[in-house]
Image (cartoon, rainbow, N blue to C red; front, top):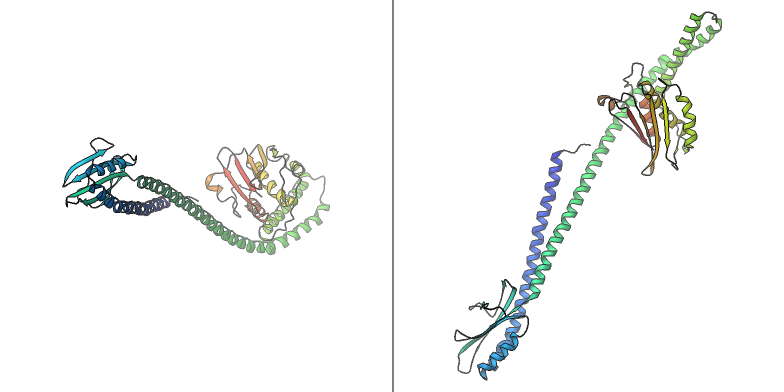
Length: 408
């Protein structure tokens, strides 16, 4: 079944759209997580500010020097980036672990977070007044590593989740693609089976007519021949020649009628284990001298086991080999292998091959590309293989022979 470019483009577009949608949905979740982390940091800062304000005010009552010592003790903490003390708007004391870096807030509230080249910084500002009513503000800026860790984890999660969802979309698309192909193949098989049944119904009508119009007169003709045969002069070579020709053609017509009948009536199947070496050894003499001295090679995989109807399978293989001989092949190779829990039998010949325009219809009833063919042999072969629960296929490269593959 061929897959159109439009179908492939549609599947690719659906996959891409799914990935984009999932990315933005996950991006929203990531931003919500980051926002929640910042809110928690601010809440922690507000708690610190409530403690810092009264403590700094009490220390300031004892003099500014005590408050500076307290701030230096806080600055010793490795998480603290900077500390500062302002009095009446002027900077009274400052310390920073990075020279020249002092991003103090200007009336932006007691707690703020901001990104810096060093990472996310949380600044807590405590406003207080001394006993004279002079205003002061204490600033402490420190790393809030949890925010950065949460952001990194959120980015990783966004990437991994998006990739995972992309894989799920691709797997789903692949499943739908495969399901669509199988469904299309099944529809083709059902349509083909329906057409085959219609053809067989037509064949059945033709066969009924043949049986009625030809079989009985032919039987009478053969009885008449048997009555006349003893009266022929054995010494008359011409009479003997025509006698044998008449007998041969009567049997040939009977064989054709019989093959027509096989196409329409149910085939009794008797499955049993087949002794493969003996089976092919019994068939080989039947193929001796076919065509221009067709040579048949047989290659059996050791240990291969086949349970099927011996006589029906022999009829299928005999038909294929005889077709190879009639096509002018000098050699035919039969190979039997185990194949995915089944048995695969291939018959390859070195004949002229089958043209592509003929290959698709060689199993159809009454379709023959040989001058003396009836178009029954391969149609019957396919019907037998189907009855045996298998399938048969044909491939060919013109000039390189033909190959028939039977899966049972």
